[in-house]
Every structure is written in structure tokens, then in C-alpha cells.
Length: 290
Image 1 (cartoon, rainbow, N blue to C red):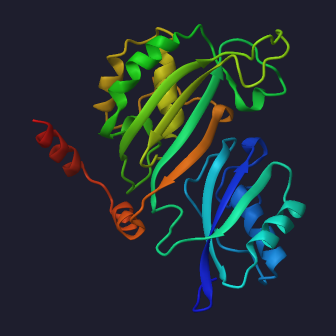
Image 2 (cartoon, rainbow, N blue to C red):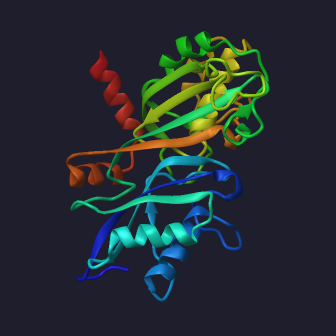
């Protein structure tokens, strides 16, 4: 819905991804976008589904605690009432935390300067009540080895080796942060009382991610952390332009979109984001470093 009497609204939301077939609407499947658009349309009596744009389209089974979306609605919408009414009709695995009027030039997708994901995994049994958010993987895993190798991936690169190929899509991204840490269980917790502690957390932040990139990056780091490959293998992957079969794409349930950051100059950021990146940028960056 767009027109002279509509304004842009920002939605901050969270969901457990286990029972969703990803973010994007797909015929006959339960998705986050499809569920939200249906109920917003119903609550506001729009005569049909709303139209949402999100910061990052998560895959089936992936969770989000800091997803951001926008939509254009009449200016007279009462945001507080909308949040309250959605809370009554949305399923328990999806919540809209807030609805706020967006600043001029805001675009949930193209105005974002970074997305931060956290991948949680464990090489030992975890509390089954929390296992939907912690992937069980083979080990043992050397967390220090992962954290030491991770900086090799930082910076502007063509991450084609870590992305599912999509015709015409760029795989050039700037990876801003990769950090691995062991999150200990709470003090005094018994063997049957391990919540989201007692696991390995890998935090990854970039200006944007291509399809399955985070789970492939984590899979490569897991391979190094288990001693199956040396740290230098990551350099070889960055020089590869197709995803090799040796990269393990990690299970979706360990991945959570935690936070999205936005630029102060929204219009300029939107223009930059809409421009497709090319290999010339990598060459220019290498020349600058020299």
C-alpha cells in the first residue's frame, strides 16, 4: 500500500524458526512474511495482505531476535494498538516487539549497514529444552583455533566459495567481525540444567550476506576447529569462485539473526546498497593496500 496518505513504518520482531519455512512467502508453506502480512492485513482491515520488506531473509529453521522490516501504511495507524492486537493473534513463535514511524529514506533492507548473526553449537549433549537453538555437531572442537583462524576471513572479499550460487547475484561482501567463544553453563548448574550456556558461540557481522553464507562460514571454521583442515585452508577458499563440496553447511537451527544496524545518512546508504558490487572493487582495494 503506497500513496500520498501513507507513511513508512518500522517493525522490530523476533521468531523461533523451527516451524517456519524461512522468511519469504511461499505458496502452501508457513513462513514468517506470509504470517505477518496476513495478520496485519486482517487487523488493519486492509482488504488483503500487507506488503513487508525485511532486513535479511532468513532460511527455513533459522531464528531471529533482531529482525527489522518495513511497510507503508496510513499515517493515522495507532502503532501501540497495532502491536497489542498483533500480540493477540500471532502464533507464540512470532512476536512484533515494536512498530514505529520510520525516518525519511528508511528501507529495512537497503539502509542497513550491517547484520549480526550468532551461530550456537555444542559437541556435547545440551538441555533438550534449548536444543532448538543449539546445533549438535561432531567434535571435539578447539575454540581457540577457530578464534585464531577467523581473522583470515575479515575484510572485503568475493565469498563465492561460501554462497549458494544465484544467477546474476554478487557474492562480494565485507566481513566486519568474526569471533568464537565458549559460553560456560551458569554457575552451579547440574548436568541436566544446561540452558544456552555450555556451548560454542560464533558471532559473524557483515554489511550483507548472500544465501547460506553464514552457515558455510561457520562450517569452514568448524572444520578448522576440529583439526580436519589447517587455518591456511581458509585462504584457499577465499581464492575459490565456486563452493567446494568440502565446505560443511551447518544445520539451520543453530543460527540466529541477532541485530541489524542502520546508517545515519539513509539515502546515501540505500543508493550504495542498490549498486551491485563487482570484482573491480576487490582490485581497487588491493591497490590501495599496496
